[in-house]
Image (cartoon, rainbow, N blue to C red; front, top):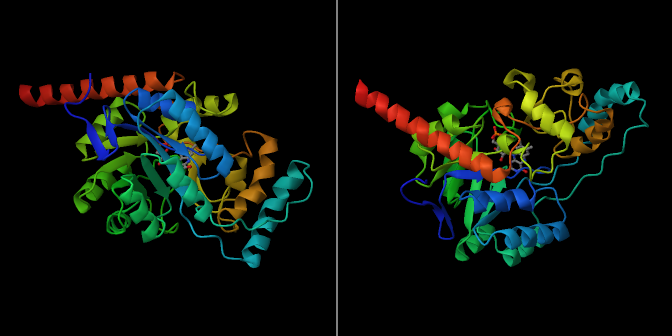
Length: 355
Ligand SMILES: Cc1cc2nc3c(=O)[nH]c(=O)nc-3n(C[C@H](O)[C@H](O)[C@H](O)COP(=O)(O)O)c2cc1C
């Protein structure tokens, strides 16, 4: 069964089901993205942290599995400004954890170049995905215009109303309204801004913009999907619920952690990467709470080696609804969530009729 008409997110993106599998760096595989597209939703490849050759390979693998629409995702943040003072402060704060684990001295941070550069843009034009989503804002208007000219849907994340309005003005065809419950990085332009929950955010964003809105954050089953659609979203962008799926790249420790972590055992922390992101609380997040961090993503180079210490020192990104996840194939997850949402919506309509 499907909703009465296709969900249209652009000239090349028509979906049978209102489910977008969130791009998740380190977790999404071409098999996961393609399985969700084949099931009637939309799969989005996570290109933010991988090399150009891998992008080519991932796109080819996804296209082999599914002829349907496939999206790709990038981070659009500017290259970090040199800030030796902050890097020193961050290194001093994290050093005791290196000693605790008996690890060698801290690595000297190397400032990475911009995430979304000319080379990546050229490859993007060549790979020709059906949708491109950006986290941390949109790239230049030239990039947006050239993608629009190809009929590629351009989406970007907003975590409040003003970011949503700015995204629409900058040419976004779709706004991803990401609530505070979401796993992974907050796609905000202002890391200091107050996070807003999905329930409050989505209807206000839907009122503020005229383009389709994807609701993201804490949507783990059909009840969440039905709620997102009721709030005015065209579809839900779901991340955490797919982490334990058969096609995900997550290892067993990570999968088990998602299935067993209660919402209150997650936290929004900048300690791993230098930008706020939600993941499982652990010793690292509690020791570094409030401590200085190096600019994003330089902090990742300082925290990364500590992952050798296991669960208590590793970044395990997940949202507040992790315990709603099920270890199933991605297509089964889409079917289950959509069927449950239909039942929930019917149940609510029946209750109104009865009263
Ligand atoms: C493990 C993980 C990795 C993520 N990586 C990305 C990413 O690379 N790009 C991006 O735009 N969003 C990323 N996100 C955020 C998702 O796009 C989405 O906002 C979030 O998963 C929705 O909330 P939920 O996890 O509660 O479903 C990530 C989320 C998780 C859980």
